Image (tube, rainbow, N blue to C red; front, side):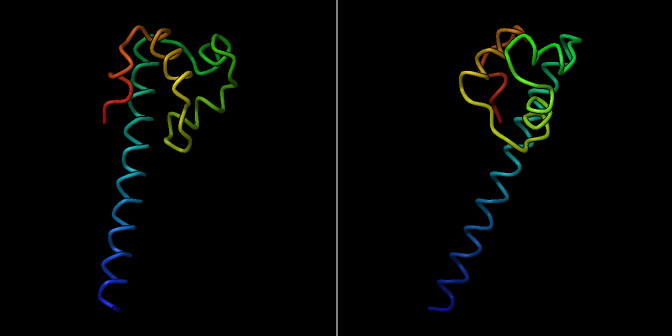
Length: 87
């Protein structure tokens, strides 16, 4: 029983680590796409109705943008949605 609990804990920790890594990669993709357009977070936020700090959190991988936000960002950045979310 103790071994199963340890295995479960390790599996959960691995999932958590993968989640965090994926969030960071998504954030880097978003930042790279924005920087390629030479737009500031403030200008992008204004264009899609978000504040600069929300975009900053997305780019840092702290929060997940909604699919609707990702679609708007892909249009502004002139990239495919899959280019933004491919990990």
